[in-house]
Length: 206
Image (tube, rainbow, N blue to C red):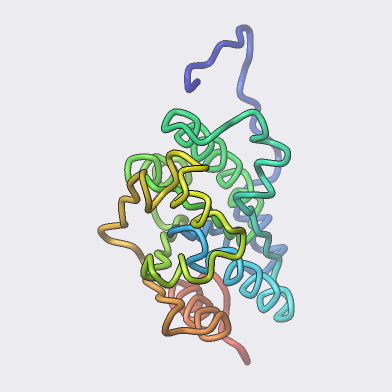
């Protein structure tokens, strides 16, 4: 699905560049890629961070795994091939958001290292921050807000990440969060500090 099938197409450069958009917004475009098991806290942290950034006058937007599968990726399932295409599309969308100067936060299980690496390369080093929600499986399974682990254990769901399908943990993430030890608010503080240190947003009072 990565080959260009369209013909007679030409890339058009606009008159406004990324730097101009970032100057207008007073921030740097960045993609924060939240990865981890189902119920590891990705979406909760992503939306908490989005809210905190907007409260500080920053433009932020969450691309959530379930929400994206209701629209853009509704034709994809959970086979290895579909998971790869799911992440490829999000990487491309994330690249556009970053080019627009938006602080973009994704919340996807994205279980395969190779797929996440492709997303990193698509967006570009310096604009892609991998955040690993390293929450123990037993904690995720105990939470089970959607009842998916229970169904997977009962054999009602096949190929469920962490049960009968692998999750490949990041080897060198920019940040590691264990939500069994950190609250969403504490995780958000750590993420904001990461953005400040990277120069993507200015610190409060500056």
